[in-house]
Image (tube, rainbow, N blue to C red; front, side, top):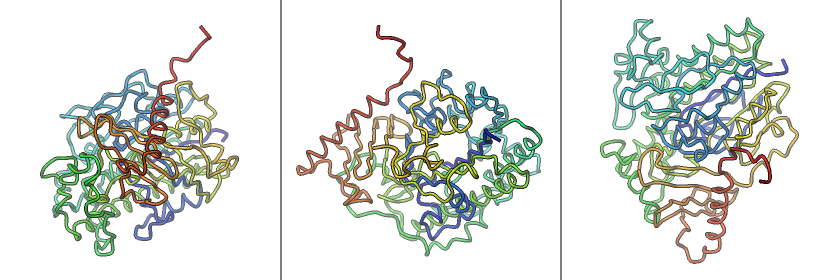
Length: 473
């Protein structure tokens, strides 16, 4: 097959340092590890926003949040935007999805409104809770005589809960839908793309009990945090340190004990091990139906999770690597390099042109990403792709006054919190964990000015390339 099938597996809120084969000795991810050995791992991949909707809009269009105008959770993507599945469908692919899409509001019982997205198979489940009768996962449970409310009755602590058993978990359901699709497509000659979008390991920290039991909290590391480090950092971090998302009563991070911090890490790792198991089942289905050789497989996430580092949980207007660096592994047997680890700076907007080029479909004029295909094929330096990565947050979730942009090079990072008196500036070579904010240091004025100019340039050069210029006048 000259045009690959595409299995696009995207988790929600999974940080980059959660893959065993890429350096985490405490987690078990044998199936993703196998993909690492078979394909290309991009170890410096960055999301265009640290929250779901703007990040997903960017990766599905190849365009930055400011360009798509889909900048906030709860905000719908404009119907004029072109999604990768729409472009693939126009090129002859059949496209399907299981799980969340999250390009529109799902608040107050409202079902997400779709644009012309290209998905002809659409098993929608924004999250496991049965908040909408249209939740396809809830319907699946009902057909099997189960209900989420009864399944979700395990014991809990302040931060962790024993969740739905693996057999009936939403992640398992996502895999079941993918396997059904893959088996059905095996009998056709039409190329396909299927998006698997499980809700895990997004909070709450509620893995299946059988996976939670595999991790002893006492074996887990404590979060990276230095007493007093937030004193010179933006107010958003100080507020979220007291309560995640600045919601009193929700995840009181400031008074979390060391035991509780380790318990959260254990639960998060347990959720990811369950994801890995279900991902492995899908890979087996590809092999058993004879489609693995012809399928481009992606494993990735939409953004990261603070997990207690810097005194923060979950997400928000925070641009630490824990929040914006994500796993990204891609494999296409005999077409892509095997076992290659690329530390080039890449962005999730780069996925759209990569997939289109792999499928032999023209890259549309509005796409701002840069194809990774030369690295994947071994035709370009795997250590060089971009000089910097760029990420944005415009009142995207919590903190209505948070309008922030981040520019990160290999050795430096600047976060401009627009309209605020404090920003962030890090020397990543001397301070890779981003503890010391150099923003107000007099000795760093030259670095600050240089990085401010680079960030401003990036904000201009990421403007919408549409409509195209047609002539000199």
